[in-house]
Length: 158
Image (cartoon, rainbow, N blue to C red; front, side):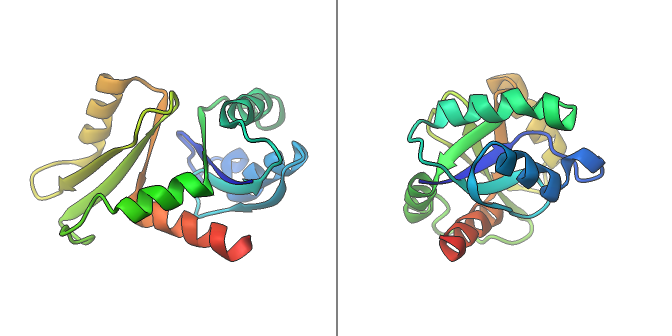
């Protein structure tokens, strides 16, 4: 199956958080066809496992051992991302400034939270703080553009 690992709190300024290092971690776990997607903690891969929670646990267990840090890993299948994009939760909303279209993924597999933020009256960092306050730290968010880039890369490398 084709998956993406969405890793929370990845900052490409940390030398152990580069796409190359994250991809190396997943390759070391035996995953195939591993590719990072933009420098914000997105790594696509293939696995014979159909259990996303098991894949998440495997990734989370190895991060501190191999890279020296712990982070939440949220794994979604290509099928799940295709279904999300097909729903197009942002119909009628332009994906350009001042709009900021954000998808929040939950570790507990709740449906994604789709937010359209008008940046003229809101600040993204405060919105992220409010999201965490409301939902805890077992979440990670990606822009709508990033979700579409991830899906395109999954399709191109399949």
